[in-house]
Amino acid sequence: MAIKMSKKAASIDMTAMCDVAFLLLTFFILTATAKIPEALPVDTPASTVQSKLPDSDLATITVGKGKVFFDLKGREVRKRTLELMGQKYGVAFTEDESSKFALMEGIGVPISNLKQLISMKTAERSKEGVQPGVPKDSLDNQLKEWIYNARIANIEVDDKELQFAIKGDAKEEYPSIKKVMDILQDQKINSFNLVTGLRAKDK
Image 1: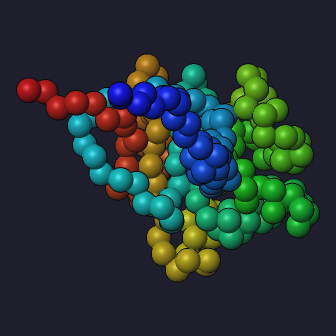
Image 2: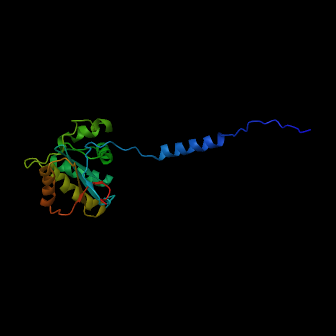
Image 3: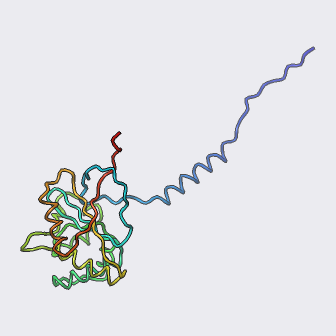
């Protein structure tokens, strides 16, 4: 006589797997860095070149929608540049304002409006119309002064020449880009990077 064994549904303890999943999720959340929204987002032209921009000793000039924004790497370099710009235009920045400026992204306001921009929250700075761009006209060429003083600051802090990159919108008219190039070349800066987006190579 055959004895029938009762079949029971096998149960798997998922506790350990859930613990591991939550640990991994927590790790990725805590180590991830939030991307700060760009004050002037631009659609860069496509290119197959894959050369990487330097991580330090770099200033980026962004051109788009008729505006120009200036950005600089290195907290101490940014602080010293702000100090020099303050001396040039007679604007006194506090230590707190200098520290906040050192953590900011690119700026696109006249020096007279910079204190107000620094006091804003990050989300407010990126709103449409808040930053009209750095003045670059012949009568008030503040972009030229940012470039000049940033070069001095970089040599004082890092003892290196500052490199430059131009990040232009693909739809931007050429005269706007050329104006920035002319300002660089007036200061004998004839070598600079052009920021582009990567596209697939043609077959």
